[in-house]
Amino acid sequence: MHDKRQPFIFGEVLFDRFPDGSSVLGGAPFNVAWHLQAFGQSPLFISRVGDDDPGADIRAAMQRWGMSTEGLQLDSGRATGTVEVSIEHGEPRYDIVAGRSYDFINAAEIPPATPSLLYHGTLALRNTESAQALAELKKRCAVPVLLDVNLRPPWWQAQQLLQQLEEAHWVKLNEDELDILADSDAPLETKAPLFLQKHGIELLIVTRGSRGAVAFTLDGQSAKVHPRDDVKIVDTVGAGDAFTSVVILGLLLDWPLQQSLERAQSFASALVGVRGATVQNRNFYRPFIQRWELSAS
Image (cartoon, rainbow, N blue to C red; front, side):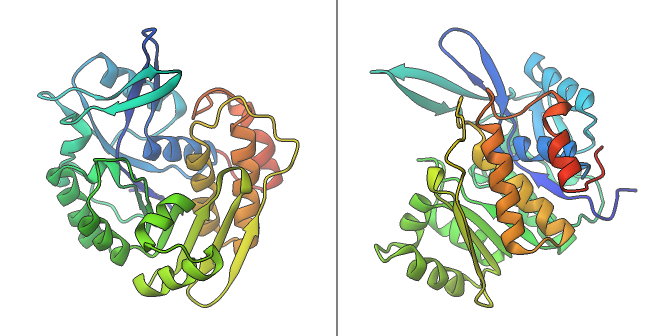
């Protein structure tokens, strides 16, 4: 039996492959699940990998980290997800390769359990099979849903995303994504509450990069947070996923909204000080676990 507080994290896991031949493990849902495991929440990560070396590497990494692999499906006919990174005129370009294993998550292979909440993004829904698996999971579980918007052209459709918004209890997106979806140039303080009310969202969190984040609730609450001026940045890869993982902690543990944002910002600010979206040293997490009085896994 799964722990009654266990969150389900649904979506892609992949490797970013760089021109020099190096590769980095990631995918927003995977990053979120990785942090939640370190914070003692034992998430069930639901995805699909190929029967290949990268797939085996993902499974091994999860096992070393203590993560359950019950939700990690094996696909003998399709390769593990990859993003091919190229550099043009000094700027990175990303080819999120289509038709990979995480595009074909099978609802029938998802373990029969009731989670505390369900998190998903938007990229893994680009293919019908994974989208249907998520829809069936929502029907089966009937638990609160956190939608993490990630608009990666051409891998999103407006009609599908509007449906996901209607089914979500909580939504996190960045300011540019809100501009696109709200189709408005109104000030954020005006636009965000109207967007929230239109879609019946209980909690809307808008991240603003170096300007922090703001949150609005359906009952009229709001909160705002800014990063400290002395944050040292090595790279910002996965900062949003780090933020989201602590937002989920706050939802699971009933933290006040302002406290959740402050803790999410604190953790994201620490993550940008190291290389990559995930950290494999548990000592990195220990100060947060102690400060927030968590029970680590």
